[in-house]
Length: 112
Length: 116
Image (cartoon, rainbow over all chains, first blue to last red; front, side, top):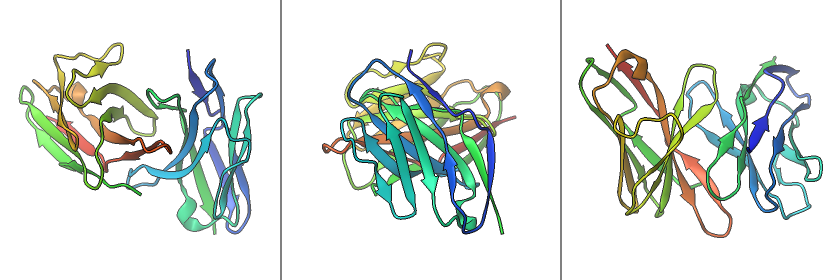
């Protein structure tokens, strides 16, 4: 079975600091996509960053970057220069081109 | 990013009635859409995969006769909760798959269903 594990239910970061959210997954597929989604209190799901498994280079989107370790099946999200607006629930998701499987999510709070 | 419109955003209905939720891709064609259910402070649970022009594929444990899905066009998928009961109260979210070599999924804004 394909599973996505986010073991930390909550994290807190000081404004302007850096925080890393962890995610591991289990799969026998070789080609797939990984995503991080943000869900603020509005509950709108927002795509933060996307990684293609066949690409070794880690994806980066402005203050957001990932550390993708395919052999270890690890896909962590680093948020640099944290802002108050980053406070939300973050979901790691795995997509082998069929259906999107989410982790349980992590609630990130940002301290001013 | 691509826009997915979901309506209504909130609906309150009496027990025993049916409710229809619409999910539209506004600026792209979506051959595949997904329907999720989310309880407070929990993850999204996939209910079914909707493919244009064919029957939806339901996840294990999801009643296909209660949650009717129709994907009659490349831009519209609907979820109808039939004979709703209080335990069906939840947040329902749709997402549409963009297949352009850089596969991405975009989400609607969700529908909060409350069954009295």
